[in-house]
Length: 247
Image (cartoon, rainbow, N blue to C red; front, side, top):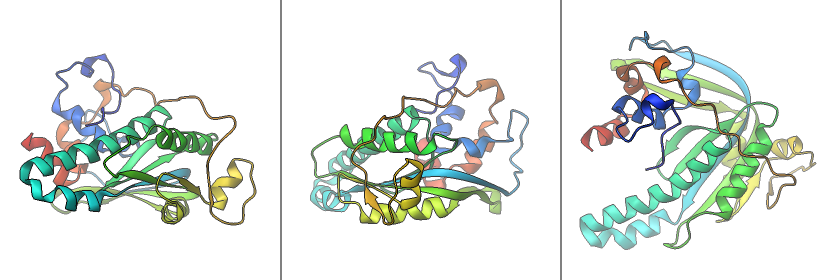
């Protein structure tokens, strides 16, 4: 499993408390306005922003599932290890270039960047991910990039469960671009290209970027300011929470 978001020295030991293990599955925006005194009685939120968005999908997963299905428990474990390795590699690079992973959707990842250098950071992360992607096993990445208005939502409240959703022009462009990308390639929307100083009227492939952005990870989280575990757990998807507690 990829490393959790960086936290201060109090929680960076090998014996990381379970509360902080949950941070890996939550975007930074989900923690905004929350602190050590927060209760599980959260409220729906809506935050409008302008963002660069990356959507990446692991291709070949279905075929590999069929191939390994006959191997019983060993096949399931091998499949999980390969998918985790591929997605973990991508997430580590997103983290290194200051991105915020918003959602895991099966064998896909949705991430975002904000700020004036958002598109260059997102593009560099995408290029690095493709250049260094784990090879073999028939798996490959398709990556789409979009830029524009977005809305980050916290929805739910039923039985104390909450979900975060990123919607708007940027994620819509990123998913459309990913559909047009070939395995092992990156496709960007016209709006994304315009932020890199290039004019394109159609979605187009991204194969290089000069100059590329330097690594710029997000600042470490302050352990003393984190919400209690029950608050974090209320925002982590049930299937992931069940897996964490079982292991």
